[in-house]
Length: 509
Length: 115
Image: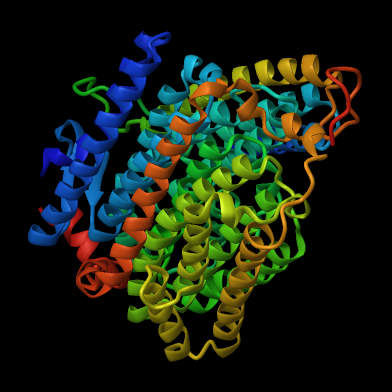
């Protein structure tokens, strides 16, 4: 029992509610949000070190013992993701100050932002599958608000589709929970794991497992990602950063949690499915990233490559690859947040989102250019940066498990990532600056900028830089300090590989 | 009793899926709403339609109905109610701005053509 675990949920929740009272006082809203973001990181750090020192922490909400009440569980995997999400959340919040525009700030943008974080943190911490559904909904409803907020045409075209696909997957989620409850009669994840292990994971449970896989894949963008490139292209870049970094990762977290804890019994069947979906995601994501010539789509398809890569690590499910999954998820949350922040800065500097209309930006924005270059290297997995350790572990796990084809696909997808991002780097930052007769597109491409007050532009650039540099430092620290971090991620991988530890921590007291 | 429920759930799913596959946003929303009703009935039925006493301590009966599915359904109803309301508002707003209530439909009028 440890009351610390409720703080990551309680803190953003109270901040979100508090912010509603200061609708017109935007500076105050920013300050409160900033303090809340820093406090969240502190709480997440406390959770990480508590788990590091004392093992898995649990909290029985309302004092009800586990199989009956809802339980919050923080193992190392959840704690690390909590920390990564808190860091990315803070950076995106700072980026929002400069890019989101006054109208959105007046219309409760920061409240929705924090409600979304409530859903994300809650999904990481909960140990009850129906509670996971509830936190998913908290997160999704905030994301509905964020994707619609502003109400320009593109958003209103994409938002109904986004809502529809998520309502459908939530409906299937409830159906899957109904079948699961009928089959084993409990909803606590640890208890589920125990009962399914006793009963043996046969035909019916495999069907339920696949139903869960479909539900979570729809949310994570694993193979069932047809909605993602369009929907993530609609809202402003700060919101995209939040979605790309956190929403897909929560779906992935749910897949990893269910298939390491609840349904690990029949890997040749379930993990075979995951393997093929991962391969297809990496291939199609890679093709998309290489094929398109507008920056938002290239970035969106890069999100998919990351999702496929983590799923590949889960599919091989050896000890090494699970360590790698923990490490790579950490890296991916931060790097994808950074990618969208840099993408947003790049597009507002260039004034268009088409690669054809860009060039020569390195003269005006050298810092941005080199950060983008480092980003490309980090996402590819070049050694001193954060992507390396995770990729090595996942690839090694894949080879140990004999998945040669899939390993090659994963490595090729890294190459495609590199190619697609270097393409942006080369064409946007080098070459000659195009003529300025492209201005008629500007206003439409950049709904954010039209609301922005012009005189504070240099100040805004400064704030955005702070956010980008914060994430740059984190990416470098994750890479350089990988050796120290491996202790943490291998504790996370140990729990994932051995569900007994989780069960004992939840039910053993 | 279960077979009646099964037919009802099947019918709700069938109509829901049909409505979701139509173009008009209004029908799609009605479809999602019917689909969630179907899922709630499914949850109720899957957990077993027992005819025990109300699950209150000290009511002196031996067999109790499982109260958990009702709690789950209640939660799910509240969520789907909120989401449906939001979806209706969004659809109305999209109709006002885009001049059509078709998903992916051609935009009519509004603030000029945009890709």
